[in-house]
Structure formats: C-alpha cells, structure tokens
Image 1 (tube, rainbow, N blue to C red):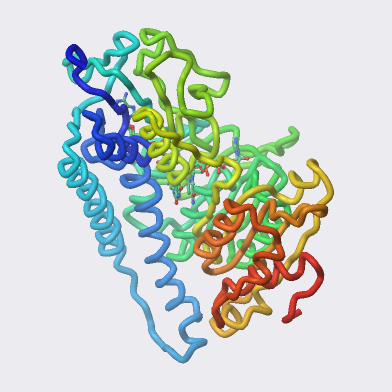
Image 2 (cartoon, rainbow, N blue to C red; image 1 turned 30 degrees about the horizontal axis):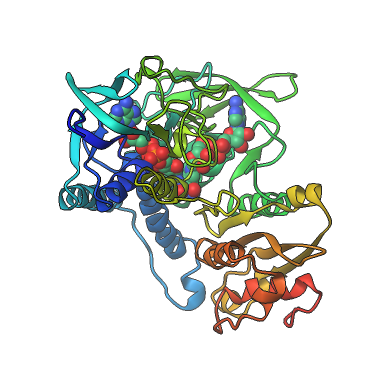
Length: 465
Ligand code: FAD
Ligand code: NAI
C-alpha cells in the first residue's frame, strides 16, 4: 500500500460510483471518489431519476385536481398552477438527497476528489492537476444524452432541450414535441401534458417503449393516446430550426418518403443515452471501448486491464440506477476479496407514468424464442382495489416455462406497478414457479392481488375473471 494513495479510487459519483465507494469504505478499504459535478449523486440524483419523479409526482396531483379524478371522488377544487413552487420542491428534493451523499462520504471517510479524472497510466489518474495512484480504479462515469443530427440542443433557450432542459422549463409549452417514444419522452411528456401542454411524440419505430413486452407496448400506447398524447410512429425527425420563439421540425416516414413540417414551442430530444468515456484518456490505461462506446467487463466487473473495474451506464446492460447501484456493491465486494454477484436476468424496469409500467425478466416474445411458455393475464379492472380507486387501466402478465412452471417474466401496467414489480423480482430471484406466487397469501384489497391472480391464470384458474 505504501506507494498507493488509495486502495480504491472511483471515477464518478452517480448511483454506481457513490455506492461502490461507500461499500469499499465499509469493507475497510481506503477510498476516494472523483466527481467533477458540483454535487454528488450523478445523473440520477441531479438531473435524472429524482428531479423527474419530483415533477411527475407533483404534476400527477395537479392533473388529479384539474382533470376531474378528484371531483369523481367528491372533492371539488379549482387548482392553480404555481410552476415556480413546483420547481422549488424539485430542487429541494435534489438538494436534500445530494447533500445526503456528501454526508455519507464524510461518515465513511471517503475523500471526494473535486474535478474530472483522466488516466495517466493504468493505476494513476489526474484530477484537477493532482496525481493519484490507486490499487484499484472503478470507472463509473455514467452516460449522457445521445445527440440527434440536425437538431441542436440549447437548454438555455428552452426551445430545443434534452431531459435536463425539460425538467427546468420556466413555463408550460403550448405545444411540446418529444423526439423518441422511450422512457424519458413518455415520463417528461406526461409531466408537461398534465400541466397543460399539447404533446406530440415522434417515434422512429412502429411502437413506443422498445425492449418491453409487445402487449405492454400496445396497451401503453392506447392509454397514452387516450390521455391526449399524439403519436407519430414510424417517423423520423431530420431537421429542427429555431425561428423566433418556435422550432420548426422536418419529419419524414422512417422508411423514406415525403417530408412534412411541424411547429413546436418546445422540442425534447430523448432518443437514448451514450456512455461517458470522452476525456478519460482510456488509451493511457490501455483500455478501449466496444462499438457502442461501452467499456467491456467480465462477470466480476473487471475490465481487460488488471486493477481497473467498470460499472453502471458506462458498461453494457440497461441504463438504470438500481442496476448501477447493485453493480457498485458487488464490484466493491469483489475488490475486497468477497463474492459480489448481480443477477442481470432479474433487473426490474419501471416507467413512472400514470399508470406506471413495469417489467422484470423476459418478454413473452423473448421467452417463446427459448421454448414453450404458459402465460397468465389479469386485468386491473377486475382488481377490487384498482376498481375502487378509479384506476381501471392496465393488466398483469405472468410468463412461465410450460414444462417447469418457473416464472420467466412478469409485466404490469397499473397505478403502482413500480411497487408491485418488486415481489415479482424477488420471487424470480428465488426461482419461483407461477404456482408459488398463486399460493402465496396476498393482502386484500391490494393491487398486488392482480399478480397472484395472473399467476393463477397461468394454469387457467383465476378467481375474479
Ligand atoms: P451517472 O449517474 O451518470 O453518474 C456518473 C457521474 O460521473 C456523473 O456525475 C459525472 O459527472 C461523473 N463523471 C463523468 N466523467 C467523469 C470523470 N472523468 N471524472 C469524474 N467524474 C466523472 N434510472 C432509474 O433506474 N430510474 C429512474 O427513474 C430513472 N430516471 C431517469 C430520468 C432521467 C431524466 C434520466 C436522464 C435518467 C434516468 N435514469 C433512471 C437513469 C439513471 O439516471 C442512470 O441509469 C444512472 O444515473 C446511472 O448511474 P451511473 O452511476 O452509472 O452514472
Ligand atoms: P430510450 O432508449 O428509452 O428511448 C429512445 C427512443 O427513441 C426509442 O424508442 C427509439 O426507437 C427512439 N428513437 C431513436 N432515434 C430516433 C429518431 N431519430 N427519431 C425518433 N425516435 C428515435 O431512451 P431515453 O428515453 O432517451 O432514455 C435513456 C435512458 O435513460 C434509458 O435507457 C432508460 O433506461 C434511462 N431512463 C430510465 C428511466 C426509468 O427507469 N424510469 C427514466 C428515464 C430514463
């Protein structure tokens, strides 16, 4: 250790990096974390998960009051939007949580190296002009917005924005065009639609939410349309020009054909995210990236260079905060000589719209490619709690292996699908069969009973349909 400054030096303090640093320190390793942003917490806490959920939660209340859902339950109110205060509570949430990480760093005696790290060799990095040598370096630099050719983002002008700009809009746009019908487009499009914007979503593929179960994608599209989002599927944006206070977009059919134009007050570019490796000088460490710009790792999060590890959005796999966190814990444990494992087959994903959309494991299409399956479905309309709460949209779907009955995937659209999916992930982690879920006693009346009923439907015996 004598000539090393640290046992572990983590680059990036997002949910992957800060969690890895805390676990390494808990395990008795001398730890530092380099972060160039003014606050800790990465994309997730500063401009991602947390601020978007703050706006989703607040706008959900606004719409419940303005859109008649509260009136339907006998609560008559005329809401008035105070957008400044709504942004204020978003900023408070971010401040509280990022400050919390700083507290945890101090508590665990983790040195925060303020600045962007750059490799100078395989075990040394430069941060703000100072050189640090570490036995182990974890790259956790995350991701940033994928740019779209011909559409230049300028968050300050608030006309063509990315997700960071879309969280900060000073007024509700008249017409917002969302480019990309993925998670960000639908979550942030929902925020501004609820607050009064007309929202048009332009998606290159023939359906929204790629990667999710086909039934879920179709049903979600129907629900968002019913809520008033207009979709232009199989369409690409080839150009966006700012003219005064508006943007004029040129759209073309994805397969080619006649162009049309579309005017918008705000355009949100949300066509995906790319790994952050620029500026790291990976070549100095002897590392390269794959064709998708990611750093390849093995099962233990080791890169091709001894002593360098990588986790989170910068490595292959879903770009999700909880995946990054679990990898951070497992990676630190491996460095400490323990056995840190992440089961990448059981990573839940959630879209925090209304209703929420959640899934874990294989889609029905993926499961069918692997063998014969049995599928059980249960509509939320037949779930007593959802029905009583005026939340009839959605369903739960359980996909099981036809031969062993082992659960391969669970998908839900429901007001609290993000909470419901945890039990499905846990069941799958324990190798549950659909029968195991069907014979587990679920509290009544809860939305989660729909998971039990969908599991019962796998063998054709749900009670309430
Ligand atoms: P990041 O959180 O991106 O953190 C990386 C950090 O590294 C950054 O702070 C960056 O400044 C720093 N860094 C980069 N290069 C260097 C360097 N050279 N030196 C020092 N520091 C460096 N995921 C969910 O699971 N749930 C959600 O609800 C959710 N909502 C999202 C909403 C939005 C709008 C966005 C954009 C993303 C959302 N995500 C969500 C995705 C989630 O934010 C990411 O998957 C997660 O933050 C990845 O964690 P990470 O630690 O790998 O990287
Ligand atoms: P995404 O990958 O979810 O969706 C991008 C969409 O844009 C896709 O549907 C794609 O087909 C479409 N697209 C690509 N190029 C296009 C083009 N030229 N024109 C029109 N459409 C085009 O990416 P998104 O929404 O930007 O989110 C990035 C990442 O952030 C996601 O991978 C997600 O994991 C993460 N995230 C997670 C959240 C959550 O867990 N709730 C919330 C927000 C983001």
